[in-house]
Length: 71
Image (tube, rainbow, N blue to C red):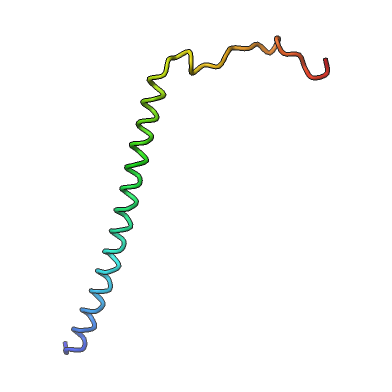
């Protein structure tokens, strides 16, 4: 192997390492954002679970109580 070959291979490895570093940074950003979303969803779920049961249910209405529009 001559010096030019080694320099070319080294340059290619540096390029690959640079792309991998960029990809890792992007993935880290995504993981952080997903973790924030998971934490928010867990807080929302906890808030929903801690609500009183009656507040979750709409008032029960019978279809017989409602007249069709043509009446």
